[in-house]
Length: 140
Image 1 (cartoon, rainbow, N blue to C red):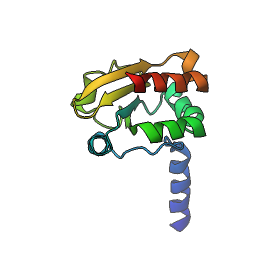
Image 2: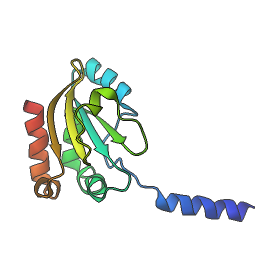
Image 3: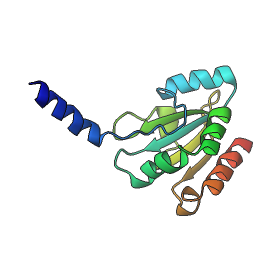
C-alpha cells in the first residue's frame, strides 16, 4: 500500500508545474488588492492557462530572472491567475481578452487597467524588452 501511494505521489508530482519563479505572488486577487492599497503599489496580474506554452515560458525564463523578479516584487503586488483552474475576478475579467498570457497592470483603488500587454514573441523572448514593458507600465 505504501509503495502504491509513493508511486501515485511521484506520478502526480511529475505533472505539477511551478509557476512562481522568484516572484512573490499573492494568493489571490483580493489579497493582492488589499496589499496593493496598503503599500500604494499597482497590481501586476498575469492571466495564464495551465497548458499554455508561452505562459510556462514566462514562468521558467522571465520570472526566474533576478532583475525581472526583483523589479516586479519591488514595484507591484503580483498575482497569478490560472484561468482554467480558478474564476477570473470581475474587476479583472473586463480587461481580459481571452488570450494568454495576458499581463495587466491595475490601479487597486480604482479597479481600472493602467497598462496591458499580451503575448508578443519579441518581448516575451527578450528579457530586456520584457523589463522595458514592465517599466513602461509603471510610468502610466
